[in-house]
Image (tube, rainbow, N blue to C red; front, side):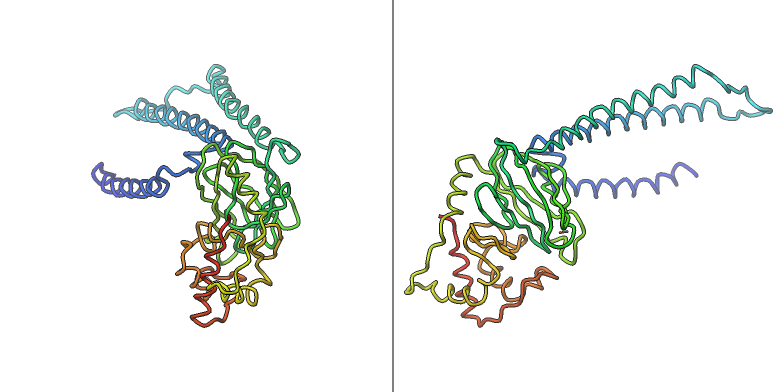
Length: 340
Ligand code: CUA
């Protein structure tokens, strides 16, 4: 192929890659991600990614340089006839190309194996670690804090600079629990408990995702991680245990509470110490998102109650049949569910 023809093919390809890859950086930005982790597990894993990339890039460059050199240096010359001199059975060369890959494999294997065992450390009996049970549901996340007797959903609250020992299972199909900014993922399997740990070194909000195809709304099975200081965490634990505020009969919220009791209470607890089959709504108004994906405001709360299937196809949340006024009252009541 003529060089200009080759360029005509390669340049658009190169531009396409540039476009696609710059898309990655604009999506990730400075947000915590596997390439910009904010926890010790993520950092160790990033080191392994960089190490293997470095070794593999080195091999690739050396092989291609040698290949190019050999193709040019030993090409067939004009007027050349016969078979060139053969170099079969060179002991020196055979030892060189056996030893080099062996050394490279050792450079990869030693830290990989060491880290694999280190990251599998079990903190489930550890005093210094916080214990959190994660239960995957189609299509939401339940979080239990067995040491505190707390149940919540969608917003995982954890203290900074503390090992969090996760025990993970599923209520239905296989999901995968993933906080990209803190470390690798772990499957939640029905009838089985998996364990792993993570920690966060910076206070802030992190994105969480389901990373295993689990049904129609798999891509919408998001959650948030709120990393808070130790004091804030203790305050949160205390407020989750507080009984929910009763609404005054005279209050404008009374109608909303009545509707909640009649239509929602059989599935959703608003007491943080009660387990439930469906998301516990204690402190719902403090959560960042509705259903894990939409901004937590009156508009989306209304839409979610009115037609959940349009927001999360396949969700088990039923359509609640309410008039406009009832919908307003219920929305107002849900927006009052704040932690003290
Ligand atoms: Cu749950 Cu994908």
